[in-house]
Image (cartoon, rainbow, N blue to C red; front, side):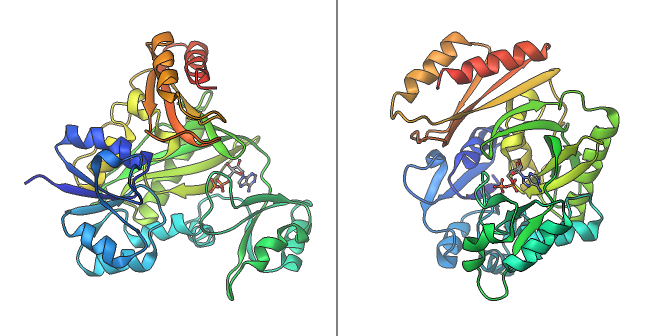
Amino acid sequence: MTVRVGVIGGGQLARMMIAPAVELGLDLRVLAEDEGMSARLAATAVGDYRDLDTVRAFVRDVDVVTFDHEHVPQEVLRALVADGVRVHPGPDALQYAQDKLVMRARLAELGVPQPDWAPVDDAGELQRFIDDHGGGAVVKTPRGGYDGKGVRVVRAGGEADDWFAGLAEGEALLAEELVSFTRELAQQIARRPGGQMVAYPVVETVQRDGVCAEVIAPAPGAGARVQEVAERIGLSIAEGIGVTGMLAVELFETDDERLLVNELAMRPHNSGHWSQDGAVTGQFEQHLRAVADLPLGHPEPRSPWTVMVNILGGPEQGALEDRFASAMSEHPGAKIHTYGKSPRPGRKVGHVNVTGDELDDVVYTARAAAARFL
Ligand code: ADP
């Protein structure tokens, strides 16, 4: 019997599961938020993922449920589990990707290295945290942030008053030490329900304006110790929280070569897009294998270097197809991935992967191909 995998959310991550699902012989079905979403080709339902009846109706025709994003409410997830539905990752794991305060507390229990942190519920508390941490801090809204929205560097307790004002009774913001990192890394792990895990090579991620711009795989100059520590951190988190599917651990590397965990994603992640063309098993295929409880594939790179450059929408509308075609024509060695989205400034509309032996050449070609969209 063909296994039917239901994906909640119709964005580009669901879209990029479609081709591997076909290759693996899985039947992929998507609950999309709207008509015309990125994963519309596989959308068998359109509706609100926060509405239990909508989600229940969708999962009636699938064997296992997974996600394009982490926003499905805990009540909905737990109701599905109580109904006997296979949900991967499950609500116990997903809570750590949904709430950064809950994540920090759990990582502390697991003994994983992370920035100093504290829950703060008013400006006075934030000011004390700032005073204890060299006169600066990073404040985060625990829930609902993405691409740097919900993250603010502050020098005074009053600089987050608008966020404090929006807190409900019993809620708090997350204050973190302002880490002076030399670069950001990401470690991906895939884990099956029974516990089998594989680790991808640690990669370097470059962010611009809080948005991932480029990824270099593997992280240049990462010595055996950094690779080993990143892998150990990733495996211990995956095991410790019982995640199933792909886990991405975002890391800060400090100038004294410490690795600190920034945050977790439990789904295919932008830091892993390189693996589609650069690894034996791409992250979308691996995620499907893991959630469908199939044996995992090798995570090893197929080439010394892979560089991924995101394509962001510009101010002009339309003509995206022409640009994709021109990038393909100028750079036939580049793999161009399109998300079928209409461009808005700053919106991720595609990415380019380039692989090769010489890092300089690979970086140059990937940037040049992505620059056809500027
Ligand atoms: P989001 O959930 O929006 O992706 P993150 O928590 O990943 O937010 O933070 C976005 C970016 O802000 C990070 O990639 C990093 O560059 C910076 N940042 C986050 N936390 C810290 C910190 N404690 N110290 C220094 N920079 C940070």
